[in-house]
Length: 231
Image (cartoon, rainbow, N blue to C red; front, side, top):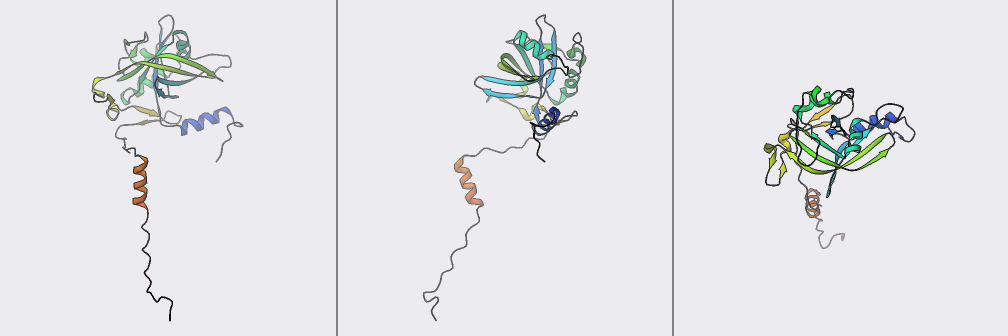
């Protein structure tokens, strides 16, 4: 089936994209308003975009209201210029979902989920203490597109729990961290536990050798006698 998104209802694009652009990492974002009130909310329209400088991007839609109504995360980042992405792992999954509840502004999602906070190194916004890894970010830019915002954050500091770091790299021991991913809608997620597969990259020369090795061997030409065809 083909779907013309220029002619379709708006929710068609959402239903198709969240099912096809998957699995997606989940950013459990802590942010703080100008009065120091903390907010926590998960977003799966999220990924890193470049490393020099280190930039992550988060898509934040407006509240589902007719009037212009940005969500707390977008408003806080615009006003203070800082946020923290807390990595969502399998052990935090259910509490992450609690943070997605549409709580009134005076209710703390962190308290609802039973999270506590720990000080960040470079930004005022704290990270979630129970998160095994977190990215401290400063707003690089925010683009308003339709009823959504794309927030680009420059990562200024990274926290990773010691046991998940291989100091040789340093590398993250991702196969032990057990991050989870978001699939399509309806509360569907995917585990990474026991799901890793290793496919090494190859050079062009190695690819050429592999193709030659897989190519069927052409049969040797039949040697004709010198008098072939003469009778």
